[in-house]
Image: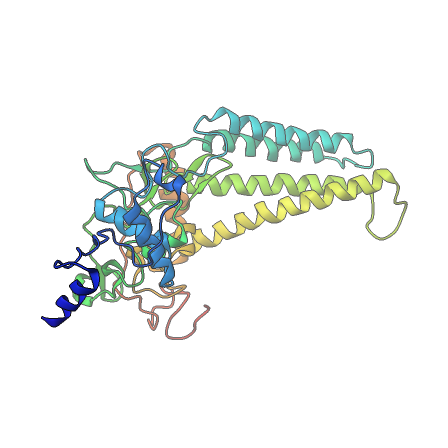
Length: 388
């Protein structure tokens, strides 16, 4: 009681001075916003202080924004601002025009190279490979990759998209600590008695089905989604993957034939290295790089067909829910190489010329048996050897 009296005496009055008003805004760092920020109608002082506080503690202000977005139930990208991987939009004609211009340019280059020697039959072979590749391109570009209709009012998860990025992997619903990525218990499966060995098969009744991925560029689900090809402006999926493989094959053969024609007029290490020879050498180097890219893609997709895998699964196995509890090179959807190629080339390839396409119902064992005695059905990892 003596302390207030002493304070009052020192102030020269009988009453204690009022306390200053408390700052009700959450501002742990006591940082005042700038005049520019105060004039911004979208600026929220409390949110900004929270962001700066998190940054001071070693976190990112982006984490706070993501927390608030999920709390409000808003999508990661507002309508009309989604990131899509397209070069010229959704129209097909710019992609087809680009393809024609590039191939006509290569043909003019071959004809205009004075050192090229067209061996007998070279014109026929080049024309056959080029025309077949062009026909395949026009059929493939804009084709149906195997779209799957989503249930009414279904909202795709933010990170199950072709444009998924690393921050979505780390903080999304399929992050390493999320419930969706916890190990699978064997009780979640059923026993499949049709195969040579009893295997507990993973039950998957939710949408989307196994191997069906949402392509953000087309805003549709694609069965056995492989990737979205920017050059084709077309997703590659179960229905057109075989056609894409044939397209890569004939493009590879066309480029190889063009390189063979250019190499007929010079030798790398001896002879006259005139301006025309140097021009042919440069053209060969350019086509060699193109062959390395296109031919490499063809070899890679041949491997995918043999092991019944997709590019999406190969690149993002750790983030795909239906691949949890699998190891690298387990190939959980793989059967024998012959059966894999039959599904790829026939059931989802040539047979579609006279049959209506229906999405394949994929299933996988809860745990891949890498110690199986059936080496024909498990040719990659089995009891006797392991190739990966």
